[in-house]
Every structure is written in C-alpha cells, then in structure tokens.
Amino acid sequence: MADEPIIKVQEVHKWYGNFHALKGVSMDVQKGEVIVIFGPSGSGKSTFIRTLNRLEEHQRGKIVVDGIEMSHDVRNIEQIRSETGMVFQQFNLFPHLTVMQNIVLAPIQVRKWTKQKAEEIAMQLLERVGIPEQANKFPGQLSGGQQQRVAIARSLAMQPKIMLFDEPTSALDPEMIKEVLDVMTELAKSGMTILAVTHEMGFARAVADRMIFFDKGEIVEQGTPEQIFNSPKEDRTKLFLSQILRH
Image (cartoon, rainbow, N blue to C red):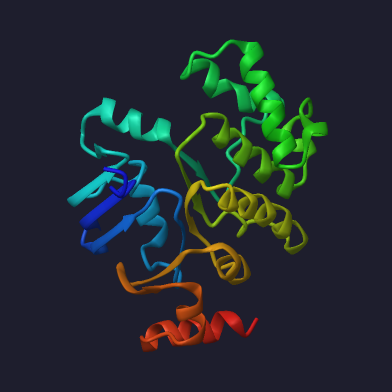
C-alpha cells in the first residue's frame, strides 16, 4: 500500500520507575513528512523520539517503523536502526578519528561497502553539508556547528529512510545554529522523512508539515505551523508559544 504510514505509533507508554514519561502517545507519520515536536523541558518529547529506534524501550503500546514492529528481537531493532538516522544534542563523534573516518565507519562495517565507495559517498555528503574541506581534520579542530554537520553527514551515510533529530542545535552557540538548520532545511526539502525535537520556531514555520506539542508525556495539540502559530486551540500551547516567541 502506497499510503501506509512509514511510522505508526499506537498508545505508547513509558515509565521510569514510578514516573510516567509517555502516557499513551499515538501518531502516524507519512513518508516524506517533516514533523517538528516541541514542548517544555521534561514533556517527554526526547523520550518519545528515542523510542523510535529503541534507545529508550517503551513498556506498552506498539511502534512500527517502515513495516517492522519494534520488539525485543535484536534483528528487528537492528533493521529499524539501519533505516533510521539519529542526530543528538551532543555530536558523539569519535575524537580519535578524522571526519572522513567517522563517516565511513558504519557503512563499511554495516553496509559492507568498499572503502572507496564509502569515501566517495562521504565526500558527497560533506559537500552537501557544506564542509568538504574538513574531511581530514579531527572533530576537536572543528567548531560546534561543523561537528554537528559532520554528525548529520555520518547519519546520512547509512542512507536512512528516516532522520530523527533530538534538539540538534541546543548545544550550539547562536551564530552556529543557522548553519545546522540550513542543512536540516535542505534535507526537509529533498523529501526525507524527518522528526525533529526543536525549539527553533523559524525552522518549524519554514519547513514543518505538522507541529506536535508535547506536555507532561502527552500530545496536547497538533496541526500545521499556520494553525499552531496563528490559532492554537489549547491554553497550554498558547502559554508555551507566548513564552518561547517572546525571545
């Protein structure tokens, strides 16, 4: 079926001890859809995005990614992870490897590509994120914005169908945020399926198909950027937006 969602989440619950972090979250994501997830700290949005590739385990409910159900089966988890790129707040690059070595590591090991093929694709991706001249440097020699762009290139090297971003700009200095958002915007416009947890409302306004507001482990409201910014229905959404848009 052509219109089968690429991600299906049904009634997902997650507890940390007695703390109920996700309270019955459900959503469908269509192929090529760009979704921005936003909400206050501790609202469950990062936990949620991390359940989609099993960095966090959900205790109840069902998650299906590209037709594969997330289960305890390691093969299912590995299959889902190979289709899903993830970029975090911290860049998680190997400091002792060059930019190029960081990017080619997984495709050579997991996809069994030749070194030559992996390096050719890595260079194309470094061009795409705007830093081909940094290929032979070590992460410590780069700015935070450059490191985050390397992290994005590294995720893209596995040719994922879905990209997950967990607050990718929150650890960056203000002048570096734009260069990372520019890369994310280009990805969004290329047809990649993207779920991004971010407070960058300009990015959301420009490229999101849908915005989803989380609070206290639940989806409070969702809609197009136009609906969310111009006529939010829920008081919690209005309050949060008024605080975040003042800055």
